[in-house]
Length: 473
Image (cartoon, rainbow, N blue to C red; front, side, top):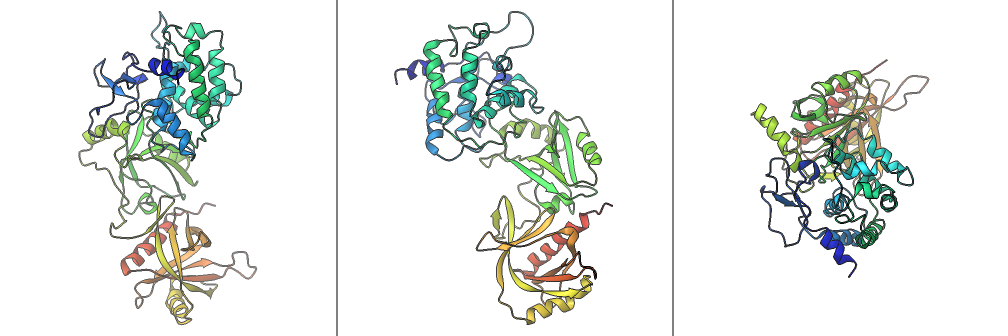
């Protein structure tokens, strides 16, 4: 414990000379700084705060306590961990302590400028990943990319040892005010880093578009959709970020129920939209026309359920230009009164699978009038299932187990509909034997929903799914 005290003292009272480029923004939901115990490490405030104003880096617990709590949790540490930002800020603060600034020139030195000059040893992959990261526009962003990658790859201790043993250490750091250049403080700090190497990190390293501004990361989801003429999203460009301001009714994006107004488009098929120029997203989509799309979307709603705080200035700018803009809390089609199973972030329908019947070589909607009554008259015991209308396919699984019963992509669906006499029963036909020498045959699958409204919603979503799917020869 005695060895830890000098380190704690060294980590207290960071100088308030760092501006928003070198400070993590961390405020209470009300926008003001909460009360904190004396001795919490402080840094200069974010953009817009007066110089000398300080904000706490770790609002819930002392930094070394966060490291120990992280290890004690046992489970892999993800981006949603409440202790991750505090631990990363502790590492960053230690690397900035006593950092020498050049006497001449306008570029302010940050710890990344020291790290990028290290030889490519065991931590080489993390250094390379950080150096080529196109989503980081500042030295702070590149440094934070490195720290996250090194934690995940368990190479941070090696990199810190390399930096501590570098012949240029004295050039980078002032021994009188540094942790790494001060032997008394360096050893306990390296021991702390070794403790972190015992933690399993499961971080999304591609979720790095806001590291220039904050250690707090947004919720990130992947949106995969079929080739279509138009996704149906209206976007606005704000300081290089692509903000969705509206999801058009009846569009593919509304049918898929993934993107919400207020979300940020971060990638399209692996191509970054960070620092995008006006119209870039549209240009990229035009080039990818006819291909399946995979979009990385950053949610406007953070892990705590509130507005993701670093996104606020961008949303305010959108509101100023678009007075009618409103954040979208959920899919427009989703009735708040519905009780549906959530799985993998998706809402599933609780249905009964009533059975199926072969309908021959014709799979048009006309066959439903005979196929549905035929299945109902067979009196097969219904099975409770979860029904998922996905972006590219229909997936049906048992309710009591993860067993998948059916998986049909939209090009294989020939029709969908219901009978007038059975308002809560619907069916769709799929190709049963596409490779048959005598020609394709079709099966009709029949399901029962809890209400006519839900039944109609499912039919419309399936119809929209294969309507938006294009065939390319």
